[in-house]
Image (cartoon, rainbow, N blue to C red; front, side, top):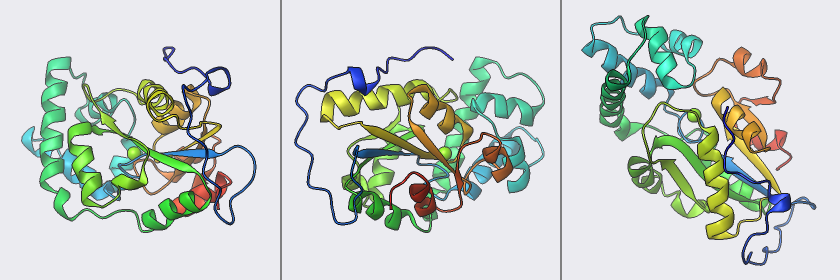
Length: 248
Ligand SMILES: [Mg+2]
């Protein structure tokens, strides 16, 4: 893994940090946490949708469809490697872009009825009640993420909403470093204690890359056993993930 641009906040002074608001009742003392949420498979309950979108790609290439269990057993990041498992062969860069475009075409077509995770609103409330801040970092294309988050009325919940600006299929670690940089330099968000909540081992790797705490959620792309093998806490709900991170 390459070295990112992230500099630990202990040695990095934000330009003019705004005064921290008074913590709400029930907030814990000590460093003020900041929660970085993942979107797909975490706040957004789109697991069946991503399987349907992949099957849209597979139909196009006359490859046998995957069910949800097989999808979760085979899923890995970078996503291109996952596709190579499914296709049973290497996928060159030009073909990868074609497949990724096809996937997003299928995904967007099925997006109209996708729900949030059952306790997404409660979890976002919990973070606010704990006197913490929160942001959203997703590998979903930024231009599609922003209106979708807005459709759910969630935009105001987050200090920053970041989707993927460049090509898809890569790792989240460099995006996480850039996200935290933006939080500090643009918003002066205190990053005393960063908690990443996500459904993929790639979220865990991104958290480790910036020295953040990570709690994994088993409602998304990876089977629970695989998440547990990371040695990190694994939660079955988003509120349980926050409890595991010390926010309640
Ligand atoms: Mg995810």
